Amino acid sequence: MSKPFVAGNWKMNTDSRGGIELAERIACGSLEIVSKKVTVAVCPPFVYLGAVANALRASSVAVGAQNMYFESKGAFTGEISASMLKDIGCTYVLCGHSERRHVIGETDELINKKVVAAVSGGLLPILCVGELLAEREASQTEKVITRQMKNGLAGLSAEKVLAVTVAYEPVWAIGTGRTATQQQAQQVHDFIRRLVAEMYDDQTAAEIRILYGGSVKPGNAADLMSQQDIDGLLVGGASLNADDFLAIIQAAV
Ligand code: 13P
Image 1 (cartoon, rainbow, N blue to C red):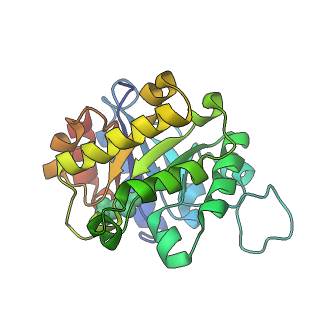
Image 2 (tube, rainbow, N blue to C red):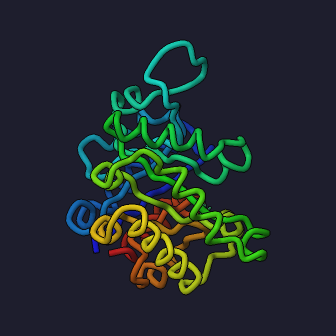
């Protein structure tokens, strides 16, 4: 298994002072374990990315954006390109987070353009996939994941797809306190890995990183990480509290 990866998605939270303070506390608290044993990233809102990247410059904690646009520059009012994100020190970018799919209305096709543009722009995309509760209850989970994976990764070669981290985030588990059981998560992670083997090859499937996200807390992180196909965690609410996020990082090692 690759080095575990823990990413914090701050969503539309924090302010400039609070964000920098949170980043500094995470950098300081994870000094000994990050880089050697675990990869850590935080994803602040766009407007705080530069300040947080600056605060983390001397640390091993990486910075990711929560979104981007697929065009490189031009008349796209309000949008941010991969090269802009690189320019201010981002390494990662979330693509297709469920809130962008279901609240903002992003389609698989748009998400695919972002993933491809992120890879060619030198960023490491984290492609989020996951089913709604109604889809799970209708036994559509595998069908939904297959569609999101095949469409999301369209056009990427086996070599390029390894720049992508997949995050399985069942929508019913996000922000609800209702975490998928470790067995439920493992089952879908195993399915995703087999799907990658089918789309690419066994080696790519073995190497690609698959994170779990959805109500990850200090109390369930170790159990989730004990599962064979869970390579890391994408943390929302608990990543806004330095102590909780540090405890999750520790549990992932
Ligand atoms: P919560 O950890 O708050 O459930 O959010 C998960 C998530 O959406 C991370 O991207």
